[in-house]
Length: 389
Image 1 (tube, rainbow, N blue to C red):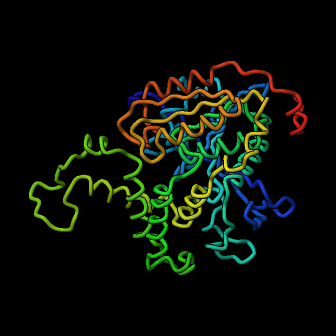
Image 2 (spheres, rainbow, N blue to C red):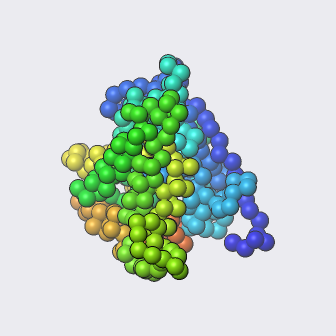
Image 3 (cartoon, rainbow, N blue to C red):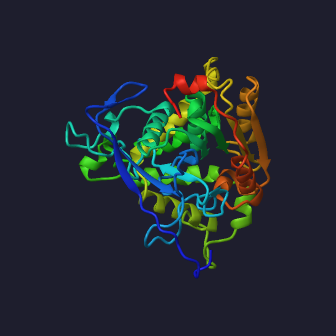
C-alpha cells in the first residue's frame, strides 16, 4: 500500500458475554462470572446472514487482524489476508476476529481483576482447554447475530481452534481452513514451550504469578521466552537470507554482548514483546497447545460425518515448528472418515511465520477455497443444534 492510498480505520470493541446469570464453566474445572471479549469486524453481514467468516488468532495475536487503528504505524496482523479485494474479501465476507480467552489484549485473562477479590486472578485463573476458546467464540458469534459461519479460518494455534470447533460443532460452519497448524504437538514442540514457561516462572520478578500485586513484571523471562520462540517461527534459510553472520557493529570485538545482527534482531523482538503481552497469558495459552490432541478420542469425527463441512489444510515446506508432517496427519485423520479435505504445501523459505506473509500461491488458494459453492447443510444437524433457518 502506498502512502497515497486511504487507510480504512477500525476500532476494537468489547462485549461482556458471561455474567452471574450465565457464568462460563471451564472444561478442567473452575468458573468465571464475568467474561469480556475484545473483537473487531470487517465488511457487512448480508440479509441472509450466511457470509460470516470467523478468524482465530495464533498464540500472540489479538482481535486486530486487519485494517488500521488510528495512529498505528502498521495494519492488523493478518492484513495481507483480510480486506477489500484480498483473499478474505471484506467486500464479500463479514469477518469476525476476537481476542482469545485468557489473552491480554482486551479479553478476560489471568492478569485481570477477579471481582470476588479485587486483585488479579494470577495463577488462580482456571486452566484453559481448546474447547473453552471455542465456547467463547460461539457465544460471541451469536451475540453478533450470526447463526452460521461460511468459514472459520486460523493459522498455528488459530488453526487448532478451527479444527477443534469443526469437530465439536460442525453444524456451525460450511468450511474450515487450518494453516500451519497441528493436531498434536511433538515432544520437541512441548519442550520449546516448557523452556519458555520456565524462563518466565524463574524470573525473580514473577512472584508466583502475583507480580502485578507486587508491582513488578518478569520482563527478562518473558523476553527470553519470546526470543527462543521466535527462532522456531522462522527457518535457517530465512535467517541466512536476512542476517547470515553479519556483525552488528563494524568495530566488533569478541565478547558476550550483541555482536551479530541476528542477536540484535532477537533482542529487539524480546524487548518489543514485553510491552504488548502478558507473562501469565503466555503460560496459559502455551499450555493449551501442549494438551491439544483431538483425534485421541476415537469418536472425535462422529459429529462431522454427513454435514457437508469441507476442510482446507495448508503447510509451508520450510516450517519446522508445525511442519508438513503435522498437516498431513490432520489430513489423514479426516480422510479416514471420508471427510472432504483439500491439502496444499506451499514453497516458502521463511518458516512457520510464512502464514503471515503475502505469498501469492498461499493467498490465492485460500481465496479459491472460500469461493467454492457449499452444499446445503443437512436438516438433521440444524435441528439437533437448535438452528432453524
